[in-house]
Length: 96
Image (cartoon, rainbow, N blue to C red; front, top):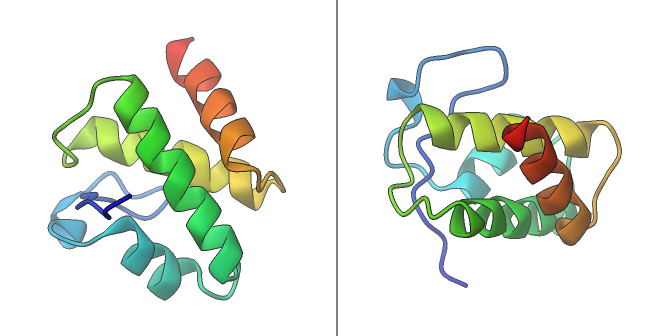
């Protein structure tokens, strides 16, 4: 699955300008590399892409993309690493 631009902001930072044009894998590696290993980053990236595909989000920039990314990252920081479970949990949270 090709990597896509994510337009992400770190948790707690609503600004997306800093992340425009960066890929989620690059952001996870540089900002969360001490928290997540390579396999974790691959799983988070898979979950991120799956959520955006399921909600029909083709534009990978903007506030919705940031919300999806932050939700998945927080779930992963809380201990979940399975991409399918990350995807389903994020969708449940975002649909509330």
